[in-house]
Amino acid sequence: MIHADAFIEVDKDITLRRLSRENAQEKFDLIIANHDHLLPWLPWADFYHEIDDMYNYTDSEIEKFDNGIAFSYDIYYKDQLAGSIDFNNVSEENHRVELGYWLGEEFTGKGIVTRAAAAMTKYALEKLNINRVAILACTDNTASVNVAKRLNFTEEGTLRGYLELPDGVHDVIVYSKLKADA
Image 1 (cartoon, rainbow, N blue to C red):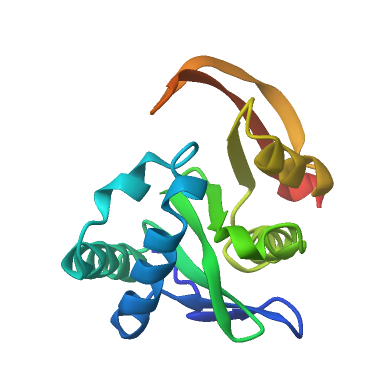
Image 2: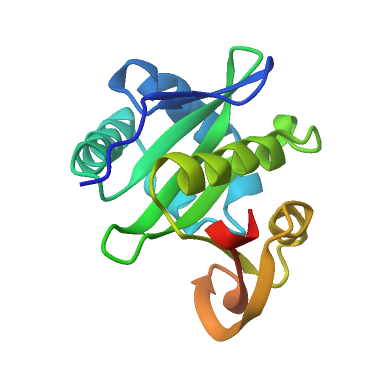
């Protein structure tokens, strides 16, 4: 089973902290305040109606973390909760993960996700015995596409009609970085 650290220091401004119940209210408030910003790309933003929804999600992610099947972290920027980043679709037997992320709108444009994603990618390839880190980004999600490009992920192709979002069906570009690329 893959075991990940509970805390990853990215740089002097950014830390990644394993999800915990202690900051559930703070995260719930961030999602609610950024609902319209998140919803175009992350339909789960509609799932949080009360704090218990966040507690249930957090408990589920803690269990996945403990069982080595997903690793979710809150992104803190200058000690303020800014968003989340995670490894999902973890395959220990195939040594691969997918990287996902989001930020509150006030934190965008500061390089936070790029730096956090770079640190997570390095961590996976060097510490977790992962061979392949993938980023799946909607073709229209310029910010996410640009993160993959800035990190020199290889564009592998487009999955047509892959993702149903509130405004319709979207194509998704698959990007990857292999241990051999690092």
